Image (tube, rainbow, N blue to C red; front, side, top):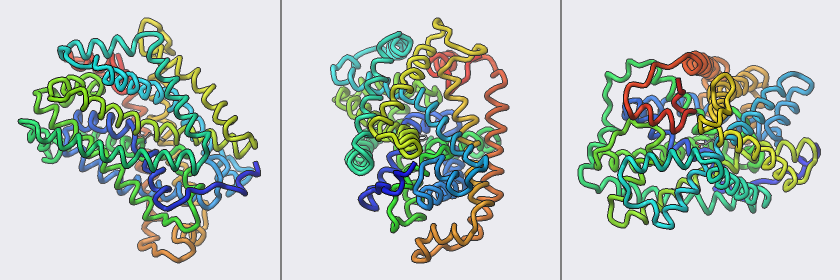
Length: 477
Ligand code: PHE
């Protein structure tokens, strides 16, 4: 409970930005964003997504930064300190549960990236037919032990970094891995756009087809994607901001994180779509894009094994800096509030998460029937977090900071006691009080109404494959 008096801080401004960027950039950018953009019309989705990041993501992120640095506490402690003895701490608990549940399925997908990195290293990813790539992927994720083994390896990697602490673990890992990630992405982008016929992929991503704007669901999935991708609504940015120094420029950091996260998502699109179009593949095939389609693309390129290795290394890095931040949300809570040593707290989190991971990995195989009301455990964790807990947490954060915090305190914190300017501060407060909660409310209603109503039966083979592969993304009938 008392340890926050000796709160560690990130060593530099750049370290703080990179740690937050490391959290934001993850499977959500490299794997989920291209898949969402592919299914929602490419360029129009990108435009709506950019709007959401700017109008919704940045204000919510600043609110989380305020809570974290002002209180220098974890996601629960921040609320408890500002409004002691009120139910507001509940908003913090939503975040703790949410982090836990996301880890339950995120580690499973992160484990898949390790398997593919391993396969690309051994060269066994090369030289198959397109159908074989898909079939092998499905066989792999449905097997009982191998995916769990890799998920546990990923948990151990995460735990290793976390127990080194904030400066020597989290910050150092981010400083090392984020530049490497950018470098790899740029190399892969150049490779992708120089393939023959790649231009169609670039046009798909950047030339808007306005007729697609009529689908209201697309606006809402873009908002959801922005939320997930920026790690908002579950205390992650509160926890990281509690390690910010007194001079960290709050608005600048929020804008940098949002800009870099968006840049990585766009780069992922440039990396994937031109290659997919160049090989005449379907951009709308969803979750299998990364694990089944891309190895196929790599195998047809000169030095394919090398490209595959670089790509899956990139995915592992992106996933690791995100699992670190998710893990830290719970670790920091246990460490601060119960005065448990960091490494012990991290061990407790990892040990408990293993149970979730085993159940969610096994539940991907329908034969194991680890399901409640016919929904697999993997899906339950996925849907509960992205559809309910993250938007709910985000809405509560906006309402709390917008209505319960004295605007003078808010302004002082966000301007480092007046040393930085905050133009349009009142517009920002208006966003927190009205615009953001209403928008998030729409996501919540849409997600619950849309996801929990039975979807139309699959019409094409691709849809069937996608539904089998990642039921959390395309809800199965
Ligand atoms: N933003 C991460 C991604 O895009 C996922 C994440 C969500 C990380 C919530 C931390 C907190 O993959």
